[in-house]
Image (tube, rainbow, N blue to C red):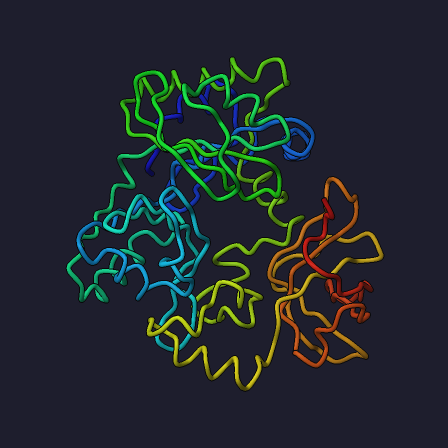
Length: 360
């Protein structure tokens, strides 16, 4: 199993370690609920160094990124980030990703850990441009600092003023390392990411610097468990659960990152057909009215008929009620509709609601 440069800290903190995307990763330290609430109420820190970082460089870097992604990177300004997706020719999703623009000849693509090898092969397969693709994933460490007090923590570490807007980034020096500081996040809270190349000693020093800066805010390390419940409260899709090669961006509620009028890109023709005909199913949110734990794979029924399936589910730590994401037949996927989740032989009633579940 691969390990990030922060593994010794996770071990020292007594984290529960699991295999995730080929890495030994902390799923929780104290408790998922405590870590979840730390992010919602103050600040928490995630080691997400398992994510992939690809750099696309060269005279036609922009053309390549434009051709392989559904969103429109030509609209990006220098220092701006874009949420996007890559699709197969049939419209199925290769991965969702973040596109960082340094300039027209340099982009960073941040992809999901479990998809790194597949993504790289797919991008190289479609690289018909004067552009070079480099996988620097193993070189980079990545810390996500999330929560209402995250800016107060990051401000103490940066030499530059922390005045970036949502989905923007800049480079700075922290503890001798060049750091890409961005403001994106996967929790629905104010949050920042620190990307940097370094040896293990410098990486651990930066982690400790973050925690020293956040001590007055009761900063907490947070694991993959809290990361999942936080993103679920905000209705954010997870690759492998809510989106994959068998789903397309239109039915997944990602039409807003699918720019069908921008010109040619991989999967465009198939997505145009889905958009014109209308998707046969839609990804929706369901709030259950009864105590239950909805899990991936549980069927959703209406009037005794199966109309869909749960893709992600949990009990919201903030709302204290069961919530789930599910693909439902389009005629049923209507806001306010009453449905039921079948758990073993019992049906638990619920209502289709608008994302996010947690209204901020």
